[in-house]
Image 1 (cartoon, rainbow over the protein chains, first blue to last red):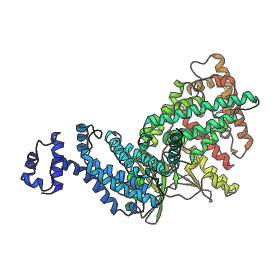
Image 2 (image 1 turned 180 degrees about the vertical axis):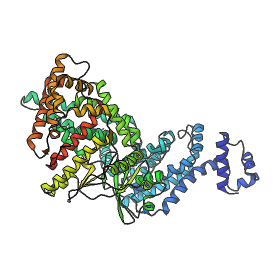
Image 3 (image 1 turned 60 degrees about the horizontal axis):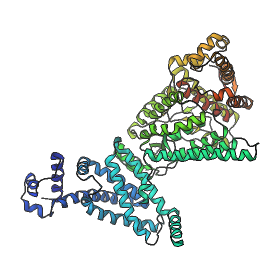
Image 4 (image 1 turned 90 degrees about the horizontal axis):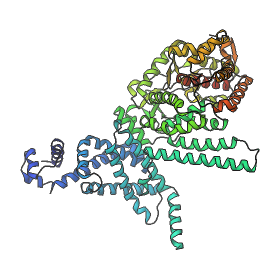
Length: 208
Length: 430
């Protein structure tokens, strides 16, 4: 038994029953495998849920890495390409994701499903940010620039949420949202607007 | 997080932008009246200038259909104070480009392949920006191609954009809302058509084939297998836009030849096909040194209803216009006389119309017409100015003219202004 087939079985169970399997035993029953083989791959069903999200991410970045044009992109374009491809991948499992949304008022209070994906995304985003420093697309600011990666994570969640609620044909409004969100974020971390804002804030606070 | 709260996608954000403009325009008025207090001789030109800039900035930020409305307004020179038109005329060329990844994404989503897989060469940098899309240059089998890509979400935003632009349009044109509605319905239906690239492809192929026999016109070949509802691929045409073309000092003979080709193109469509390429802004035509014109972009095609056609072109008939009863009947059919008009108003406006029609249809009534004749256009502008400043006209808030006349007038305005820029002397008789 492979991780992949466990994930597929888990998703399928959700799609057909609209709820999570009552036990690992029940899940293994439809896989026609003993329960022990499940534990060779995962320790619990939470692990499977997490891995489903991580899998979307990994398949996206794997495909991007192989793409020649992607290699020539600037950091901003790379992030755009990532989001576009990512929502394409999510589309294949939209029904499953919508069910998760019902369950958790997603992605509000329940982030646990996303925790391993979050870690991987942070790594990916910090890579992009470093690249941005080199090409001076992104301005390095003391203390502040360490926070950028959190901003990008919020942006990823925004994209996810927008896509979940998107009712336009072919999700083309999500495309527009991604384009605008990424352009805005890069303009903010590149331009002097943020610096002026910080400078102003420091000035006001220092006068007290 | 700053990034999150500032994302400009929804209607609320768009509305916000327009509200800001509203405030700015309001401020401009205050500035104007303050200045006027100090210096009574000041004219409204500066005010119009400032308003036009603020409104233009907002509209170009919104892109899409709002930009289209700006273009429409810029076409009807004379209907607007000069400052507005000059500023809006710029909207015909500039709009910020789409990112490379979004272009690739559009290809993958609608054609299943990336541009590098579909073409031998694909230039990621847009060669040209249009109001609802942008054009890229590509090469396949040694042939240069133009690939037009639509911005995502344009069709979705047409309705809400128009609703947002309406208050400005009402303010600028000075018309009541109910009457404005019939024009906005027309604009909306045309804009929605323009976002339908499958329809545009069909029409382009159809109309180019039907007009192919007209001398000196060049139409690109379209490639349906490389097109989708977001992408149109056609031959790349060489040539210059009107302004750049004129800088090369083309001879009178060449200018006449181009002018004649354009005139014939429009006459044939209006009178024979009863369907017309209704977007005659200079960006849609490529002029070439040998006196030929490349024509593309059949996104906006107006189909002319029969009864409108009959009435509209009766106006070019001098004999008919002499008969007062007939004339009034035609004006009523064309809704140039409003049901609420009093007898006195009917007489007043009929007089104005008659003069306007005499002026505008002059080229139709002679064998040859010289569009290089500046006196003619100055006379038109002077008359428009005169109309614009007439108290009765300014205070009349009703719409004059059927919804169909909107695009037909726009077409002729566009044609006249191109011919006038070309200073073409052409044979106009049918």
